[in-house]
Length: 239
Length: 94
Image (cartoon, rainbow over all chains, first blue to last red; front, side):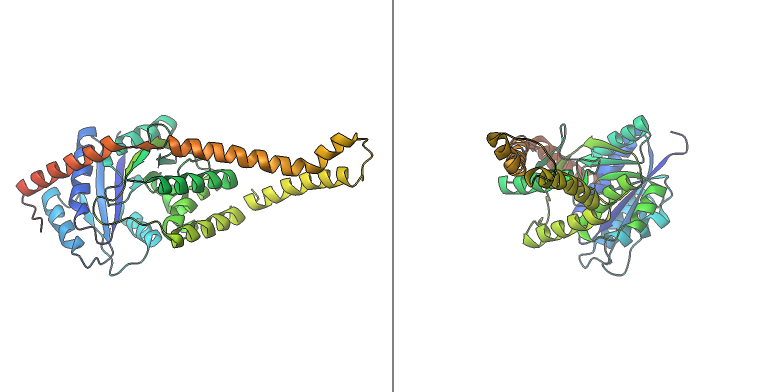
């Protein structure tokens, strides 16, 4: 493991309640598995005081573990990653949601998987093996499975979970992908994996359990479905 | 690599050209009446089979979509643990 370091990018917006928990969990699992790491918190000017919480965590865990790279206002996910990569000291970058839907216990598995196949990208998947979800009703599962099925048929992306955003990338691969991707929202996550396939990067997969938001609310409305279809067509025509 | 859309269009036009050639007798192939019927309706049959297959696959995957009850319970426990430990290290929850 000599010389390998993992930078976790945590873009936050109003995650005051979740941030201390996710950081505690990250520290726990990284410490137990012994990998070198840093957690980069990119707060987009949350009005709820997320940044103050992050500063408390920085005091507890130290500046080499908790790296604060706040931005003035909400500027979108893609630019948050670009911003984070610039400051990342690791040679691998892990991106995940800070809302506790992605559990840090899977990160050691991601790392193991990456080493196993020397992958460029390791993607968490809710759709295979022991992967799954918590807190989804029948309708949500149906929409999710249908959307995933259509995407698999049309794009043949070489990864089973396109809209999930719990992934490990080689830093230079993430850098190249982020700069090539133009979509917004969760279509951005789809584009990242589809372009990874387009550029010929290797993708490994690890089944994950996705626990829908504990604090705050999750959304899946007509406008999300519309955005998905638009994104799907865009990727269908361009990749 | 050409985009998926064009790969699909190429595949579709190859298939349709063959079908049109057979149905409108551009190539001389003798069909019996019942075989001709099958050829004419072939694209339709394909669609029905594909739709049926899709419904079965999606239905099966919805039915076998894991409910991660334990994951949720584990997380709830860990949230309590995290709060206790962080508090003992001087973190102030509001």
